[in-house]
Amino acid sequence: MSGNVGGSNEDKPNLVPVLDMVFQLITFFMLVINFQMNSIDKSMDLPVVGSARPVKSGKSFMMINLNDKGQFTVFSRPLPEEQIPGWIAREAQVNRLAIRKSNPNFADTDDLPTVVIVRADKNTPFSTLAKIIKICQENGFRDFAFHARQPDA
Image (cartoon, rainbow, N blue to C red; front, side, top):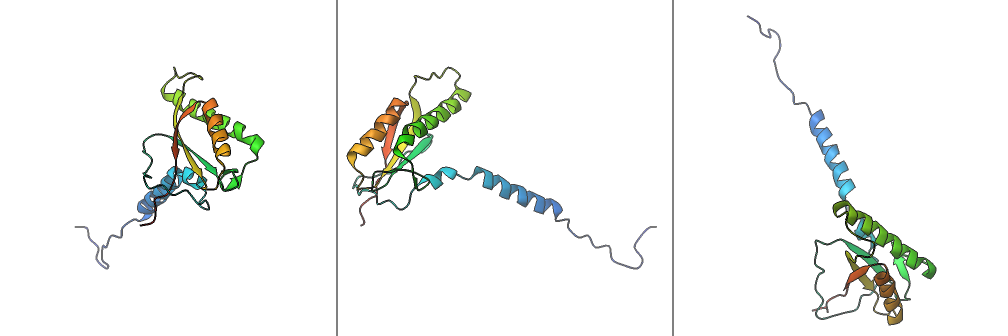
């Protein structure tokens, strides 16, 4: 007969696998966080539109910010005017490469299904906005959404 004569046989839980799982979950959520939300310039004063409604989700999108001086901003920093066409062309190329992974027949001349979300300050000159839209269209973007805010109730 075997047994523990002098002490108690108390099992203690092994927390190492639990801690390992917690660290893996933290790492996973850090990797899948949406970094595109960092591209929103929160200092802008968007125009007020009574019929403003949310952008339909499900499609990929590209965020464009135009501040009150009409400057194209990326991560809240103004981009020099001569660099804007190159930046938009690179974004279009990245979108084309992503689409080709699922659709190898996608051509360079095909329209991109990416939604271009334009966040322009209410004081942005229209000529600047029109120029940015034209550059986007030249690079294959056809679907645009304009951010605005609803009137305060």
